[in-house]
Image 1 (cartoon, rainbow, N blue to C red):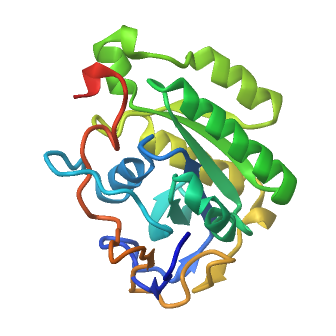
Image 2 (cartoon, rainbow, N blue to C red):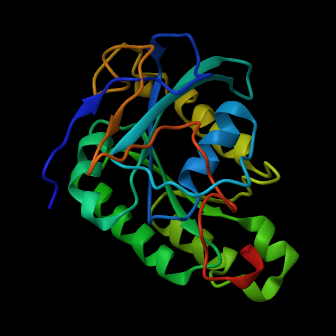
Image 3 (cartoon, helix red, strand yellow):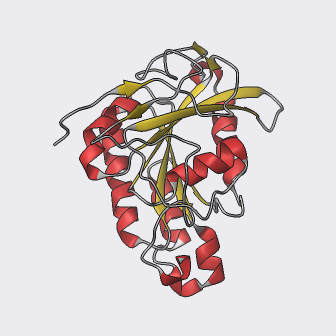
Length: 244
């Protein structure tokens, strides 16, 4: 039960100065899978370590201009949503009208793949035009110790292809495949120009927050979270001992 909910409008530091957003991208997935670390690496090219993990509450927003393979500049507006099931209904606010969804799971946590499939069903039901991109986070952990892996790469590739999606494995620690993931999103949309939103400003239900230059967060019990804050591990905790 959330006794008090307040909205603060704030854009992630280091976001693109463009108010135009061509593609609304939403990140979905179980808590601790590494969604925020993924965004940190993509927007800021950094991996924050040595701090206490803070869960995202509500959502946070940022944007970045990226060139497609054909050198077409495209602005991605990215919503990082809370992974906790208690904020599940809120996530529906943020994926409304999304052109692309990056559905994240932790390759060292089999349960996180089941949550990824839950979000897949939600999007197929409510946003059937949204393109789906599955992102297996924390690849560096499995490379360091293969016994940590609980989700096979081929399993997800087959599942993604069966529903017309794409699949990637990434590492926010090393940056592996992260630009490749977001460039693929840009390429897919630039191949179909009618899909580009060309949204200026926008709102929660469209591409970006109404007031560019501010952050967006939800508060519960006085706590808050915003992108650019501390993150530990490879974007969150893991049951795998090699993540410590």
